[in-house]
Image 1 (cartoon, helix red, strand yellow):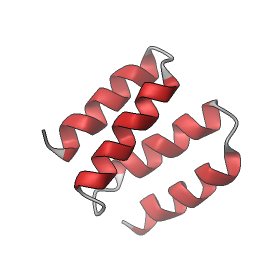
Image 2 (spheres, helix red, strand yellow):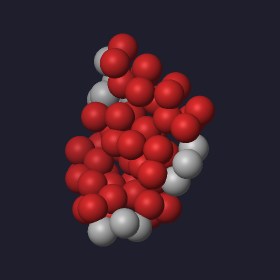
Image 3 (cartoon, helix red, strand yellow):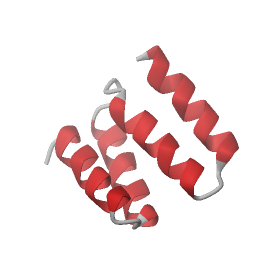
Image 4 (cartoon, helix red, strand yellow):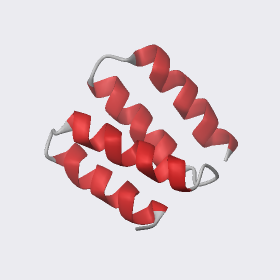
Length: 66
């Protein structure tokens, strides 16, 4: 499975409110391709929903770089 697949799975979990599985999927996407910016911002958005604001800031910054 490729990085885009995992990012899309994360999106499906996110819209269902299943944040922990979404986090796992976004991390898998990043692990497979750490130059793909979307999962960084998606993971950041998930962290915001779970109150992990400091982690979200770093991920947003990384996503902007990419």
